[in-house]
Length: 475
Image 1 (cartoon, helix red, strand yellow):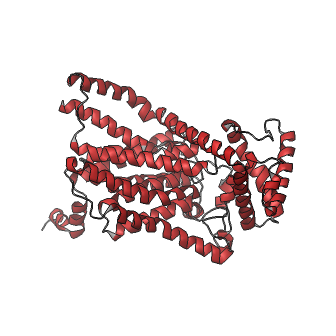
Image 2 (image 1 turned 120 degrees about the vertical axis):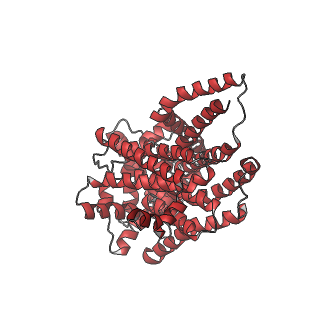
């Protein structure tokens, strides 16, 4: 038997071909080729040159051992383990952006694998996946030694794993992969804790969409009911978090993912603190409140751009938030807590919740304004994204051509497009909404936060584009 025939009959190759039929192999090759082109573009434009920011030292100097030191840190384990592993293997920080990009491409492939079943053709799934290679988060943050790019990539993979579990819930490997990706996402960046409530809710909603469009799509019914699926997804997302929180509670006496939640929260809620509010607060946090007011007044005298008045202006709160967090409330709490990081965070959480209880109307106004700002940021960033900026005029042209060919009637979407269209729209909307809601509780919806919240609108836009093209072709 010749070598070529032997290789063709080899069991691993046959298994690989059964897992990845010809169209899927070509689609994956296309995604990888697009990934190489994007990497070349990033390199040529200087976007793969390693950058450090204010947070970088805290990841590079994170104490992996002893365990107690890591568990009381303001950082979680995920990103320090990643970046320190890359440094130990490469010996240079310049390798970090490339490592982050390689992980991103792999995560996009996971999303393709998980979502492929719901697309009528591999080419459509590949087009949608390829758009995720150029999210704003990657374009703007992949070169930075910080958590934004890597956490966003892992979240993309987690959404692919979620869809794969909904499609094939009897696969233990898919459940383990989803659990690991959710855990990794919030260990890299605690803001991705929103995945814990999102996954069960989104899983139930995806099954509902599946059942709604099933008569037109010709696909079989889900093998697990929606509420049972929701319960399993809730356990999958929450159990590792509870287990890790219990480990921290037993080890360092603090229940939670990390001793950091109070920092940003107090910096935001502290905007509603004034001397009149102090007597309303619990006695144990009144010393922190008075110290914070003293520091805020001193900072306002030193810096004319930083006011010490209570305001409901969104822009004013956003502009003062960072300085309020790190120059006012954090040092005030640390002074009262004698430098204990766990106690400092606990005091800040208690102070923030107490201020909100005393000034609920001001906080409610903030939530409404911050929600509107978050939606605006996602929409505005999406419109100026290169894919949308260049594709939108073409999309409008395709739409009007389709109308002209059908005598002004838009035409019904092809049955095979119903499921991916609606499912991806649901994922994009819910991923954005839950992310915004989670962020604005304790932080302004800044651009880098909202870039990550809007990643799934790009593949949905690609499906809109494909739908109009199919309308012309079939018209």
